Image (cartoon, rainbow, N blue to C red):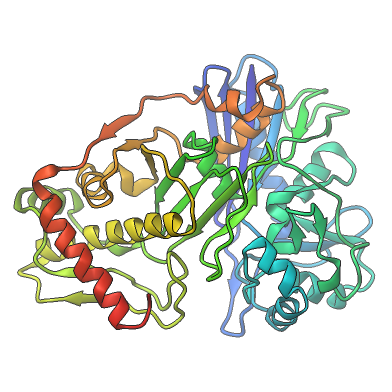
Length: 463
């Protein structure tokens, strides 16, 4: 069996051909034009570039595998949308996930749908897609409808409009609890919006060969990039959580029941099997050490010295969104670092403190987190950083061999083929996990640093 997952990211498209044993049999990537952004809040991309890029990577990966591809699924950024004509062609640029032109509509939607959002345990941000959908409806009154990125690709594959998945539709105003559009928050009702299905639903079979995919290949509903990246780590059953340390830190997992966070820091997608996928993304993470030269040498010396004597919150931008919501949060360092090595170590510890705070927030909300915690993302490739995270959290960390969105999309495609669904698909993940235990010798000083960190957040009014 071979399945393909496609990741349509902001900077480019990547495809993974994955075998039934979980091995990656081929990959291919294609760049996309950079989004156009300005100070007014505009953030847009030429949606006409998506399909040529997807077609290119599909042709390249299918040319490298010997057997026909059984199924394909597409994942993309959450909330990127475009208005289309009757043929499914874009009428203008796509409004990206961070476009703010729907901010006023989102403020109204937050008020009008307040009870619904409360029951879902989520908030409506200024960049939510539902406000931009209202904006597009006014800007393109003759449009046939609106499409999320995977919807447009699915239509190109099958030659007809397809349903959207509930994951990509979440920030567009879809209610995964009642499984309906929040009709009250749209100016025009919901006739302009696509049908919604759960991820792993078969959207159709290819009526003809397309981009190297054979006739009869299944087109399967995917999930957003964050959700697909989580699934790629193997965190697919209740109690399992993954800490993904990329540019930012993301904590996502699986629960049997919907988790409601009054602060809005944590929100939940719907699991394909009916469970829930609570999670949140910090503005802190690998960005804390981005661009720092000689990272390997700094890690080695920082490991030799041990815990820092200073405490850092290595936030490089303004505002925090998880595990607490504070628009005016700023990074800080308590104390004077001896040198660059100590500052480096303090930054690594600071991100680990954010992870522990996130885990504590989950427990405050009644969410059981059963160890081990899965570690993934580029930052998890640092043995020192992973050991610090294990020591600070007091949990065993298992470093996942996979965390790629495209790999997770391939798992969603496989779930539509395998009788055991997503659970069976997770069992095929290729590669070996490495296990990292807390360092008992460093737990006491790290605990002292964490308590200093937490107390400073409280003093600043952020906790």
